[in-house]
Picture 1 (spheres, rainbow, N blue to C red):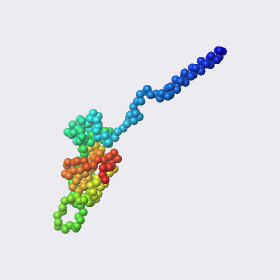
Picture 2: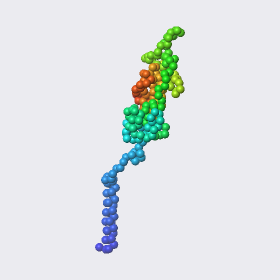
Picture 3: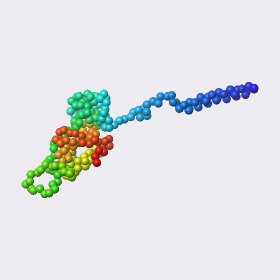
Picture 4: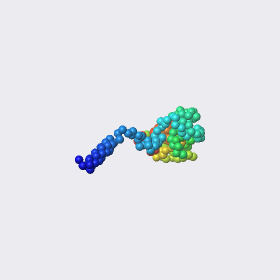
Length: 222
């Protein structure tokens, strides 16, 4: 066989081997490699703490006691310094953009009660001039709804249902940890705190009325 033919055969065989190796690598798809972390983890996924109240007790955050910033502390330590259980602290983003914890309504204690004339529902029949004023009583149709502005009380309606009053007062509004916005429905004090609206029959002891979502709305109200 001529020498040139043997050279061509050797080159062809070498190219065939290289092509086979390349094709094997392409079709294997790198199945043996570690997939690595998901794209969200690589980019640093950010979680809105307003939707994550079960925060790790070992993470440090800005801690407030008696309305004053005292430094960085874990949730457990911040609760201890406030003399409270950890679930009695509001946790969220403060005005600096940092994670913070403060007792519920620490910066906004309940205001004084509104004037009696603002809490009286519209009478169904005329009231005689000398007849003493009677305390308002919620009726099936509704009760007076009031907003506290920070200095005084303003009437939103003299006859409104509880759900409508909550929507009128707080729909589309959120507050930061330790803050609170107050209102009244009949003889009931309402306050907006992070992630929920609370109610109190005595302007002192509050319990949750309805939860608030991330969009500052109340899907639980109909």
